[in-house]
Picture 1 (cartoon, rainbow, N blue to C red):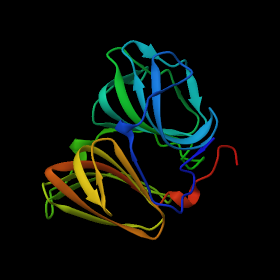
Picture 2 (spheres, rainbow, N blue to C red; picture 1 turned 90 degrees about the vertical axis):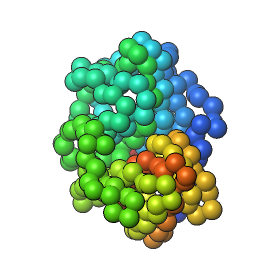
Picture 3 (cartoon, one colour; picture 1 turned 180 degrees about the horizontal axis):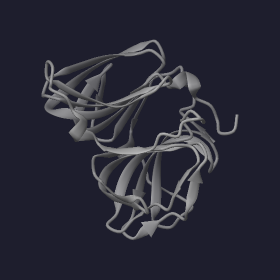
Length: 222
């Protein structure tokens, strides 16, 4: 399967306007944003766990990172409430589920295969002081990518180079960028060489951004 697999094109997905698609596990549904591969795939997805649902234990051969958008994600490593950012590198394993239910934004098979750094962070706790209405947290940095989280005051402008590509997920509020109005759970991907110029709406915005990673995009095991 290929979905939004042309990394040289700008892509906007208003995910709340798309249908939920059942996963192989009962009670776990998905909204696919981009994908290369079948059930094992390089994938960017919003996943919804119904209360009491779970996946069987599995190993993340290609790594997994996710943000908890609502509810509480759970596994044998603990409870991960809304606003948590998690990186589970290649070879890590867990048994994910959610007693109360949750929604997560998750990226699979997008790690350096030698990466073994595993962590969780509460994104808001990492924010620095605001500059011109934008507070920024650097969540992760390596030779392939930089992952950040931003709070924008109403009308604030966030400008960022997309060298190596850029993805942005709107977590709260609204953003205007490149003629598109992005709201909660809207996802933007810019090709390498672009520039992001995003203006927050009247209620401000909270956004997650990853840059630099698109040149490394490939299907699993290739």
